[in-house]
Image (cartoon, rainbow, N blue to C red; front, side, top):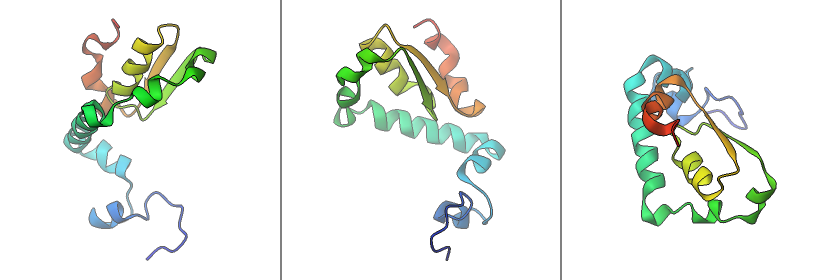
Length: 109
């Protein structure tokens, strides 16, 4: 349908949702879907089978001071990095509906 397209609105997701829209536009218009997606991603990254040890155990983090987790949702990966490397200043950047659930207590860590 869209050979060689790099457009974010030309995807299977867009087609299944009426066409001409991106995943993130749908999430902004339907916050409940963004919340469901965030819960699913948290469950996925929290599973023992999907351990973040391969990421947090990388010695290159010792050479960094700042990490910005773009699209980091509720901060599961960012928290794992911060716990493993306390010297890091970690920021999560995502759409407002995705980060709202993370604000309770996360800033204290």
